[in-house]
Length: 383
Image 1 (cartoon, rainbow, N blue to C red):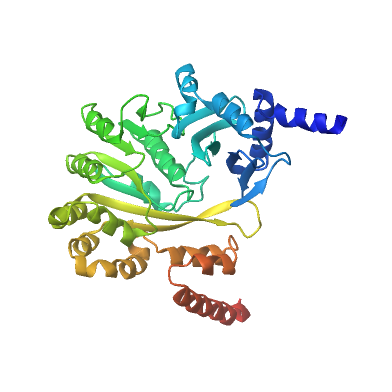
Image 2 (cartoon, rainbow, N blue to C red; image 1 turned 135 degrees about the horizontal axis):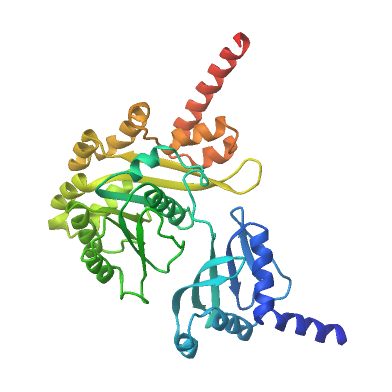
């Protein structure tokens, strides 16, 4: 009986600030990227891409609600917790880290998903991103789109671009985020960070206001509708550098998605405007490292040369972009996913099996790798 009561007390302890924070710290120490807290389940953390249990005791709905209250930023929010359905905020734990928090309802109970935001603002080097991104970040105007599925590291790459500009140029950078993730200090630039729902009503209102705030660079956390994209393209057309994200898997689908978000009768004009405004598309996928420690980004990079702009303008030629990216690698620093995957395999960063599963064209990737290995074997005896 005593054991039962002890278990109940231990379970109740996780809802206390110290208990929650101990579990969160343990997850961070193990390299977690996300934490899942759900009524009826144990604490779970995503470590090296896999969701693993951290505790043995399942949480009750009351315990999960108490944790949600602890994470909410204000008394006003805590007072309306029972009316919340989907809620985003950020939360910090001194000496451990900052978190992007999403509080949701499932089966009428609360669930909390926490994304870890490191204290240190990332760099191209710390993320092992291609060096050509330094050139991309040096653009004076236009639009840079960072794309990929949820959890592919888009926010980190955008933060690294902003960080590079902040270190190397003298500009005013305005960011619109939901919520603010990485905190940028003013270094060579002045950085104004605005949180949606706190500092401005929504992305559309924030973007319209940003253009009156003398910005050189505008970061938009996400472009969700045609009006926001239209305003973003206008900003690029009027001499600003715009950085934003889309949930698209590669460069070609990014161009198609932007155009398709406009009404049918406006799509031809949108295609022409995008062809002029776009500077680069950086698409990425996170893959587990071969040594089992962490993940690495496989990156496709499209840089808008005159030829790329011509291909984007013509809907019938858009499919030719992939071949052009592949062939222009040496001259312009572009690369397809499959080219980068081959490089990661050759450098023993990811396994061949992992790369093959992530390849855009697995059959072609297999053939290219076989050819590469044959060349390596032929070259080896003479070395």
